[in-house]
Length: 257
Image (cartoon, rainbow, N blue to C red):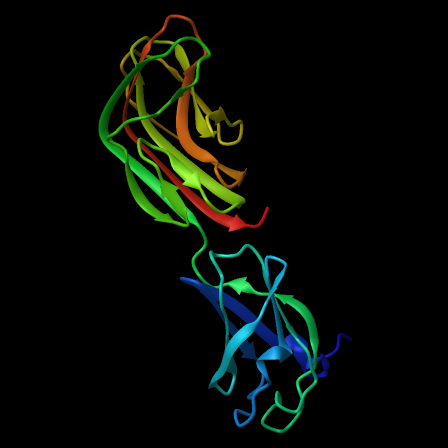
């Protein structure tokens, strides 16, 4: 049978999170068992690496009998990876029944701040574009405005700029019509103006000037500097006019790439 929790090394029974604050990191250690707050390890006992660079712990303090807060200085921006290592055992880190906490190797800290996300919306934008065959057209309009953005930049006209790399869910919608019947229209998102196969949709307009709603959903690997927007293309000849009255996108980071 698997060993019970109380037989596992104490080091495996702590949770570590961090949050970026202007120019430093606040690192929270949450212990499984109540700790003796009358003693505290020297700051040098904590080995913190920020994006593979060792950073000194400049302050530490008990928050309660389960929680210790560490501070590291001179951090310019939200890091991609933070690890914390405890150089023990040491009598200054112990439970209330004086069991010394076991040493541990580097443990990955979780970012306790919100993951990156972004959205934009265009309502009654009245965009009109002649669609040449097999040419992708960005839905680009000054009437499109930012919805919400965290660790992501809205750069106007229906474009979101990625500032944190990773796996993202991407969802978009369009209210669209075509001036000529029996034309096939493709829609998708673009990554730095490259149309994506993931999330691509198509619709054949049985009647001219018939308004329909189209949406698509995908998981994308996005890099820092990628620009995300929505685009459409007509696969048939005839150069119909495509009209768009509503457009929107929602992007959420879900993990590291």
